[in-house]
Image (cartoon, rainbow, N blue to C red; front, side, top):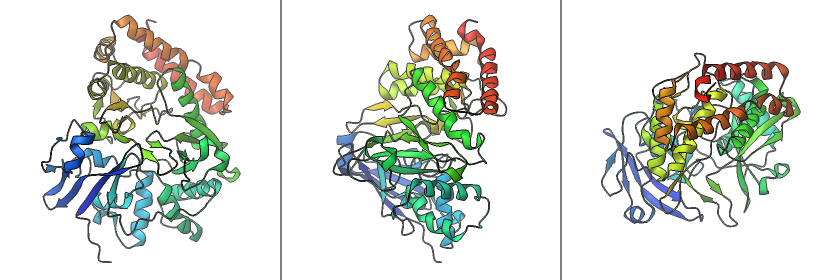
Length: 437
């Protein structure tokens, strides 16, 4: 078919009240992509991306990398992994190859369905917001089928039919199959794929035998979120939902969306920005250091507490072997008045790297950071003394030592439990100098 790339998009923002306001215009030509704020926006709501964008009416060119040629703040709305797979399926069905698409075409496809507060119009003609009533069990099984067959184009008719629904509920982030669902007051017995007034928005993460922890992926993440809560790392609200019997999983993990504010009229939103988008740090390669993350958090949120919270989370990731801590897994939320806060601690689970390297470095070290580099991190986080920082590290390590007990409560298999426990013991031993052992 004769496919014409999108040349211009209007960017809107949904406020926490549900009101939608114009933000500006995003346009592209052969020179690249350019953004210009709307005159009414800047004075009222502040800068969407204070480290890389100017808070004025000038035409702002986008960097060529690392966000596919658009500005980081809009790059955050692009799909990756699972969302990309779904989009590509739809475009291929229309005879359009992924190589023909620009980032702007993908934003037009996202339209009003992305995470965070930003939306893009006109919406792509290939995007559908059709959300037929479909039960979660069916949705999960279809997502699993599509994920497991993602390397082949051989989809049966039933999966083809449900693709439109999966696209409408498929979130933009992460590699795992997932869906966005809505429910009244967290009641999983009444969940649906479309929002009713006052509904909460949740992300359900499905499982597959092709994932590192197989069908226990959700159970393990639940244990990690429980530990993160006990370690005062402020994770999002979560619950386990009974999985379909045919899926092979005992339960699926559901995480409450923290950018979404339920309202009786139209739902409100908070603007969400990742460290990847904020700092132009490529999440596909190790491009971030906790030193930068802590400094950026303190500066953006105008709060020493924000730096100390990120330090605490860094220590959790170090000792709990959450090494998939790349720049897209760190987020910030902006209120309507332009002020910022650190987002909840999300995508926290057991994810060891083959070479035992964290994606975000500890003062230049990907693994086993020396005492000096962690003392430097603690100082930049604003701890009054190393003793105070060490107290924080010990609190985190004490919680992680409860893994076995918490994993047994969730019914994690002996084999998985033993493998994780072994890695955690190794991490503690490697980093014993930090806790004075």
